[in-house]
Length: 294
Image 1 (cartoon, helix red, strand yellow):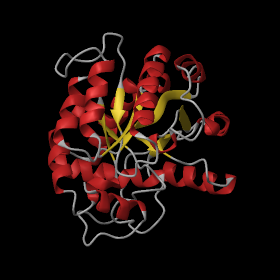
Image 2 (tube, rainbow, N blue to C red):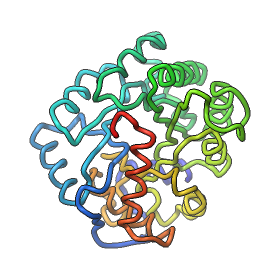
Image 3 (tube, rainbow, N blue to C red):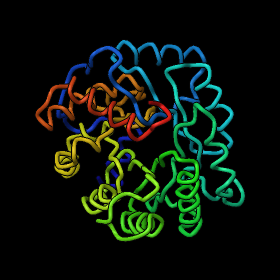
Image 4 (tube, rainbow, N blue to C red):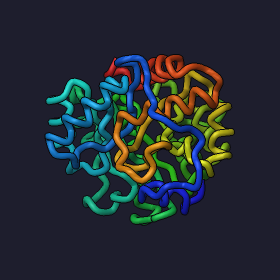
């Protein structure tokens, strides 16, 4: 996916055409939105968003951290709402904004809270490059090590940095792609996947999962759909990345977890199975990766 298309999606502008239409639905309580950002919502808005998600068959959501300063807020939301889980971590955009890169032990300790199910999102973003590449890389490696120490998965953001993300994962996990997952069972998800086939293959070889967002439904996502068609079923997750990247038929509106059902329906059509099968599959995969949420 080009930078231009992804920015158009984040800005909420409608692509030229759609691959699906109509509201998505799934069996009650069967879907998980594995990646969303809900901390900016008012309490009233959040209650409505959670209710609409439940009505669409989305029972649980993971609120993803982009700054450590969000930790208390995200943990508080997850404590107050049984449908919510959260992560802790620093987005590569903010890797240079919150002082020195945190120590591995500090991040790992924050991940010990029972409602914190993962570390991240962390990774590399060379499209916007809001932080120097060296700082992003140091932060990424620290998050990998913290997630491994804490025994929780890492949520990875990768944009226009496939080769370096692949290299760092290989180095940190102890070898070249093809050797399988890390011996300690460390897991990760390449969230909102829009990278090339090479990164997908490295991630899968190292035991990672692929996060499928509403970008799947965009008409220009031809190559992405070809990649997602080939990902092993047991490595697929669905997500919204809300409030960004609303799927067809909701383009131009603020994304929300209920609409992960539309992405699930599109993924089901792509792979020739029912929406119910995709819901059951991706929720089972979610529990396998995010074991604290099992």
